[in-house]
Image 1 (tube, rainbow, N blue to C red):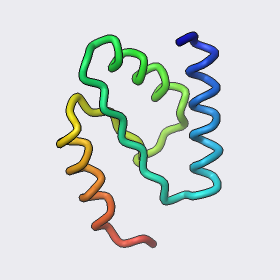
Image 2: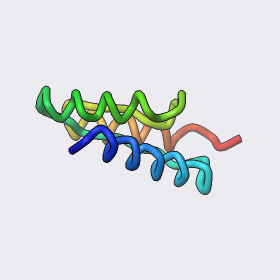
Image 3: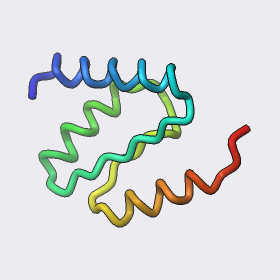
Length: 73
């Protein structure tokens, strides 16, 4: 994965969030390498509370469930 590739993915994700402002993105990155790449992606994303990086799937699923419990304003 190149830095340009990460920028392009972040751009696509930001466009998706503009189309659907209720979009939730949870990345599971169990290894240090995966986590580092995902942190670079996160840096390209504009400040949002709708994205989060996790080391394990259970934590990601729990976060998604909590996000879905919040009322949409």
